[in-house]
Length: 300
Length: 275
Image (cartoon, rainbow over all chains, first blue to last red; front, top):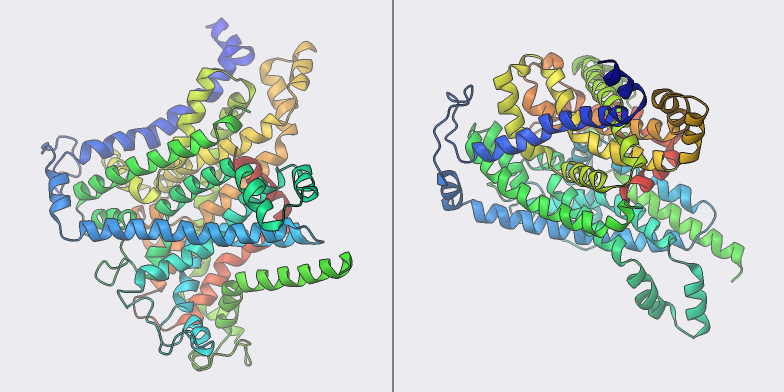
C-alpha cells in the first residue's frame, strides 16, 4: 500500500494515474455509447423497451427496413452533395484568401485572424442570421442578387425544394472559410522562401510557381484539410436545425440530421441508431485518412 | 509601383474582404435595431435610421434571456472544469513520452474527436435514461460535452506541453522534487497560457452547444440559450428584429472575448489543429 502511494506520488504510477482516469472517462462516455449504438441497431427498440437492456434481437431487419424506405437514397444523396459542395466552396475560397493574405502587408495577420470570428460563434446564431439573410421576400441576399441582375425573381431559399439544400450549403461554406484559410495559411508559411527566389531566377512566372512549388509543397496540408473538412461537414447539425429543419419534404435532409430526427422526433431509436452506425463508419474512414496524413507531425 | 502604395492597396482590399465576410454579423446588429416596418422595407436600408434601443430590454424580459444565458454559462463552466481537470494530465503524459502506447492513445483520442454529436446522441440518450442520469439534465449534458470536447483539448494542450523543455523538469527532479511536485510547480505554470487559451476555446464551443442540450433537457428552466433561440424561431416567424436582438445578446460576450484574445486564440488553434 505504501509502495503504491509512493509510486503515485513519484513514479510510474503518477503517469498511469494521470492518463488512465481520463481514458476511463472517455471510454465510458464515448466508447460504450459507440458499442451500444451498434447493439441497438440490431435490436427492436420502442418507447416501451427503452428502459430495459433485454430487447429482442432482430438481426439485420433494421438495416433492411432502412434501405427499403423511399427517402433513404435521396437523403444519402443530399449528404454527398452537401459534403462535396461545402468542402469545394470552403476550400477554394479559403485557399484564395490564404494566398491573398500570404503576400504580407501591414495588418494582414490581424485582419486574417478576424475571419476566425465565424468559428467561435454558436452554430444556432449563425443559422439564425443566415435564415434571415436567405428569407424569400425580405431577405437581403435576394435583394442583392436582384439589384445586380443575377436573378429576376426572388428565390425562396428555404421553402423551394430545389434550393433548400443549397441554403444550408451557403451558410456552411461561410462558416468553414475561416478555418480553411487559417490552416492553409499555416501550411503556406512553412514553405521555404528561397524556393520561390530560385524559381524566379530561373524565369518561372507566378502561375508556374504556384503549380510547381506551392501545390506540391502543400500536399500534406491539403490532404489533412480535406479530411478535416469531411469530418466537420458530417458533424454539421446546428445549421440544419436553424435554417430548414430538413424540409421541405426531406429536400434538405442529410443523414446526420435524419438520424437525430428519427430518434427524437419520431422516437424510432432503432432506425436512428442504424443510420448512426452507417455514418460513423464513414467518419471513421475519413479520420483514418486525416490521422495518416498528419502522422509524421503527430510523432513530432 | 512603390512598396508603400502596394501595401496600402492590399490593405484596402483586405479590409473590403473582411467587411464582406463579416456582413452577416453586421446585418444581425442592424436588423435588431430596426422597427417592425423598417425590417420588411424594400429596398432594405443598410443603416438603422430610427434605432430601437429599447428592443434589448424588452426581449431580455419577454424571452427570459438572462435565465437562458445563465444555463449556458453553467453548462459550459461545468464541462470546461471537467475537461481541464481530466484532460491536462492526459495531455502531459502524452507529450512527455514517445512510444507505441502513446501512439495508440493518441490515435484513439483523435478518432474520438471526430464522432458527430448528432449521431452519438441516440445511444447516449438511451443509456443515460436507463442510468437515470436524465433526471439531472444539466449534469448529463455536461458529461456528454466533456466527452465530446476533451480530445480536442488534449490535442491542443499536448502541443503546449511539448514546448516546455524536458530539461527543466529533469533539473527539478535532480533537485529533489517528486514527480508530483515537479509537475505542479514547474511544468504546469510554464504551460499555463496554452491551457488557458485551450480552455477558453472549449468554453466558447460549449457555450454554443445545441444537439445534446436540445435532446436531453426537456424542462425549459434548465435549457441553454441555443435551445431558447431555436424555440424562438418558429417555422413562420416574422419577429426577426427580436430574434436578431436575442442572437446579439447571446453572441456579443463571445465576440468580446475573441477580439480581446484574438492573437492568442488564433495561434493556439493553429498550433494544435494540424499536429
